Length: 291
Length: 318
Image 1 (cartoon, one colour):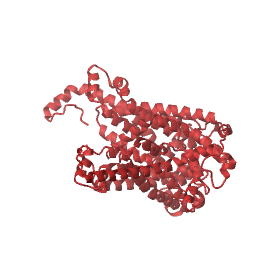
Image 2 (cartoon, chains in turn brown, blue):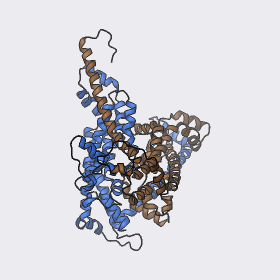
Image 3 (cartoon, helix red, strand yellow):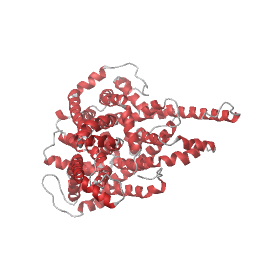
Image 4 (spheres, chains in turn yellow, brown):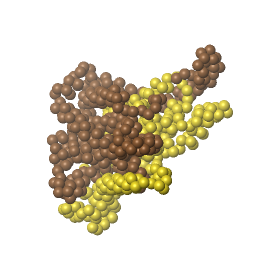
């Protein structure tokens, strides 16, 4: 835009000035909005280290006047935090593995292998995204009950090994960008698709697999309905269930509740900051989608 | 869907090629089916099968343990005529969707447009705005319960503007607006989609418009907006489906699915959940899921029908 040269007449200057003021206004709006977005998280942090006396104070104090770090120790000892953490990590681990393996496998088939009925089948994959989860929730519950899977982690883990429409779509979009030449060349060398998938496609698709893994991690870590429905035994509880029970038991201890909540959210926030670009990449692929 | 890889138009050539390749093609095809087999098993076992069962079950008095007698349309009739909570919960859900979906769609589009103005620190803003979208679950609902308390942060901030804030989760008139407000915290998810689309708009379009002296508003109306209509459409369709799915926040924030003051947060899925997993009236609950499914399908079909009128696809659709 500044390529016009040095002989800019006056009105260009005023246009530039106008643009600069516009940009300043935009920045001010964005900063204000950003502060509003961050305010709840600040509140969580502040509340978690306040004393109960300070929390009861009115009007509320905007920052903690003295820091009660022992709230965290207190919160952890009021419910079996580490047991629930281990349970959650166990489930999440298998859900991530299942999703990363299965969706890349299925998506490779849709992207790189020729077979009859592919278009129809892929349209079916996409259309399952339109099914509201609650339609299948009850019959799935009945199904898992009949399998005697209540009070086990199977209903939470096993479905992850059978693909999810959104992830299949995401991975397929990515595999489509791998030049067919690579695959044809490997085929001429006598490789079958399983070999190509494992040795060529997966190494090339690492960023996309990371995207799937990160979304799957979040979904599983934050899953509340699944454990609520399938896990009754308190020793099998996940962090989400633990937090929920903790809330019902101590409904006014906001500092402990927020400290515990913070600990539950922390891994998600940390992963978000480390793997941010994979979140953004996943959404970029989705945005390129056409109906 | 053709088995041959030869893109020739001559028929005889095609047949000859397909014969020569048929053994290889057949082997390839078999591998293709093996690759998608996990999805097929999952589709039959976890989706299509359960849905068929649910469709049949919705015409029975199934209760998991003792009975499964065919009762015709009784569940559907009971829901539409005898169950006041059915209509109440449907009303609550529609109320939530009508406000939450357009507000978040508009909000995320607006933020994306602002972020697209080449402001400094765009990446930081993007991170900050997107952050709430990855934060869900019980922890977040507990946080909002506290923010929305009559003496919480939100009312404190409102008091700076000399606004006397409502009792939010305690006042039946304000419970749904409270959850709508909470849903707007997640504008960042949609925002990233819009931003990705906006950044895909060729710069040359804006440059030539500037030469023609177009104002910022006209540039938006004639360039940015048409170019992002596919994303608006996608966002609308998916958030409509998601909006009708509202359940977890109400369940956690109203003491185990109590529905809040005067059932003002008794959402459709909450009512269905209580019928299915508290009363074990599975047949009835399954008929409820089919009715909401039909409503969502209908709305999606209307969306798809209307799409060609306003959704602009650059170039030809593949």
